[in-house]
Image 1 (tube, rainbow, N blue to C red):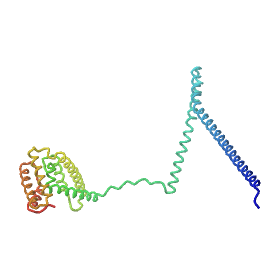
Image 2 (image 1 turned 90 degrees about the horizontal axis):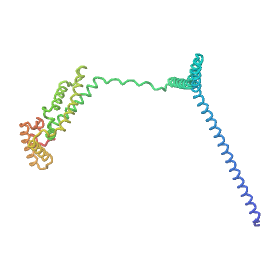
Image 3 (image 1 turned 135 degrees about the horizontal axis):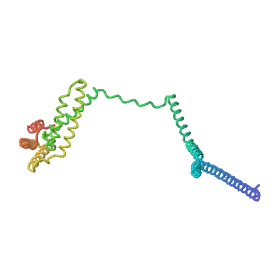
Image 4 (image 1 turned 120 degrees about the vertical axis):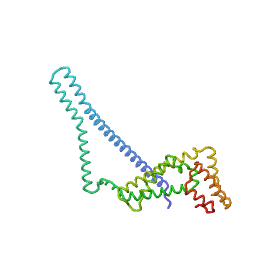
Length: 298
């Protein structure tokens, strides 16, 4: 049997009306809740405003009271009013300072209580213990290692003719910075020992190594600044020719060409050394001699 269309249409209409009523009820409920919330917020704002106005009144009322009493005392000219004014001023100052004192005292008490609780629980940070000074033996050992590194760097310079030609002032003891380094290096070398010496001797060695390192850095910086600036154009040209010969000897794959370049460079450097233009260290001269005889430099 087929359902009656009119009955189905009436049921659908009734269900839709019920849904609309439910939606309207929910909307009314939300609007009422929003109204209550706004009224509550308004009451809170009014309460805060009254409190702020009361505080401002309390904050400023002692001052106005003091001013009024002082004016009255000045007008009357009586000692009694002056005394009363002073008393009222003291009361006003106390009233203004009392809240700050209470808050400050409470904060201090809470901080002390927190520290006591932290100490009782074992969580309070312990004061940092001062670092123990390094042992003299360890300081001496590190200074000895630093001096060994400095000696190796100085020896590498003296054994390399190319470095000497690029920094001729570092091989010339007439240059003040180089002379200071040579003296400091000699002092540290004289104080160096294989085993840890007495404390005073070890401290002197450490100080001498410090001075030698500083003097070496100063000498290198001065030599880099000077370069070939102190030479005449002819002397500068001769040094540049030797640099080209050494570059050719280093980069050439042809043995006769390499040996010839080393021989010519050695001869030119001997002339420059005798003329006092470039002071060639003995180790650099020995390296050139070995290269000129056919042994390739390391």
